[in-house]
Length: 219
Image (cartoon, rainbow, N blue to C red; front, side, top):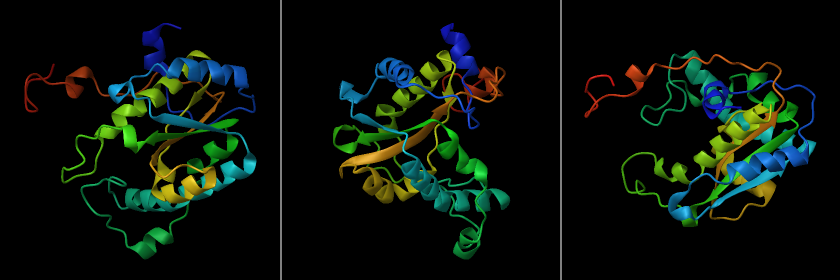
């Protein structure tokens, strides 16, 4: 596929057919994805390839606490899990929120799940001393995750970046035997899409980019 076509049609895939994703295809996907850049080319990302049913069931369970808060805030008209405003719903309301299957089924239905981790000991996080949630360290891991999805699209497969399990990172690390210095970046279910979307809704360039200053003219 043409690179621009892949970029414009790589959707978030959450519904999968029963088709397998063979190891040799997954190897090609990871072989292409590994050329993503990372800070200092230190390549601190590690990927755990999970097919075991019991492990995936546990990962799905570990999604649930974060999903409850997400759904409760969404119902309250809030932007879920934003780091600027605390949640309006009470802890009791969050705990009593039902977990929609759409948030856990991809991890269970996909033929393979990738758990993506990054070694914080080799990440250059220049924003670590700012009074806000750190995001710069993601530059050393998320390009690889996106490369995985682009390569999967080129192979006729798809997936999505899920992050709900990161709220339960200690339990995930215990489940998979992850060393202390590593952080959980994403859980990525991969498989053959039930439906391949080809028209994605995104803001136009004029809303995305401005000239010279944040309040500058649209580019």
